[in-house]
Every structure is written in structure tokens, then in C-alpha cells.
Image (tube, rainbow, N blue to C red; front, side, top):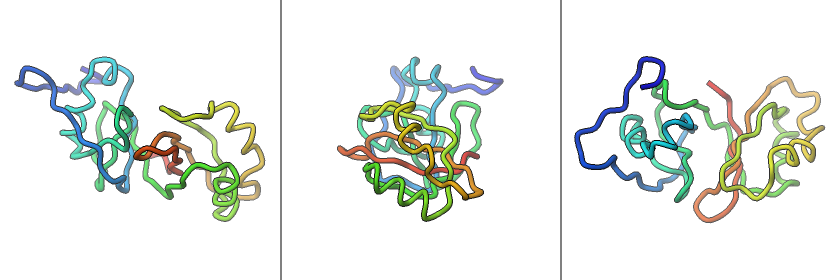
Length: 145
């Protein structure tokens, strides 16, 4: 139970979840859900799939409120490359204010330092969700819900 919500199942073990194409919404499960190995059950409730094998970020085409995960609306998905990411942020006027990471080769403080002036002059703040997409590093540029 988290904040009055519950994840319940009647099977011997929680369901497995498949990897699928990223949709319009990204979910970052609560650490308690991940530690409890209940990501598959949450995915079932959200009608979501994993963005990559062994990565606990879920994706769905619809937004479903849940106390078990933070929801982000995906504005763009960029294969990782510092120059490419900076160009996209600058071009859209997006200023990253938060960086989340799972199975990604760059630490958030290092990436924040490298992107320090990205999006300067822009008035829209975004969250960067850095992870693997399939077998390659990628960045989701998101609007936190």
C-alpha cells in the first residue's frame, strides 16, 4: 500500500511485463514498487510496457493517475548524444530542471553540468529521463504531470 492505494494480485507471482514502443506517457515507479518486484503488476494496471529490458520505466499511450508512480508527458525522445540533446533543448527553448536516470552511461550531475546553459532564454522547464531505449541510451524530454 502506498498513500491509500494497493497493488493486489491473486497469482503465484506478479505478472511479467513486455518491452514495447514508447508511448505518450512515461511512468517512474515508486522505489517501493521496484524493490517489491511489482513493476509488472503496476504495468498491468496502467496498460503499460517497459521502455527497455531490465529498466523499471513504464510507457503507455494513455495517462492513468496512480499513487505508485510519477507520470511524465513525453515531449520528445532523443537518442543520446550531448550535442544532439543540447540542440533539441535550445531549439525548443526547454530548460532541464530535473534529470532522472536508470541504466544510463552518464551521471545526472555530470549531464547537468554539461547542459548548464541549454535552453537559456526558454521559458519552459522540462525533466530529462535518461535510460536505455531498446539496446541504446536515449533521453526522454518530458513535462512532469
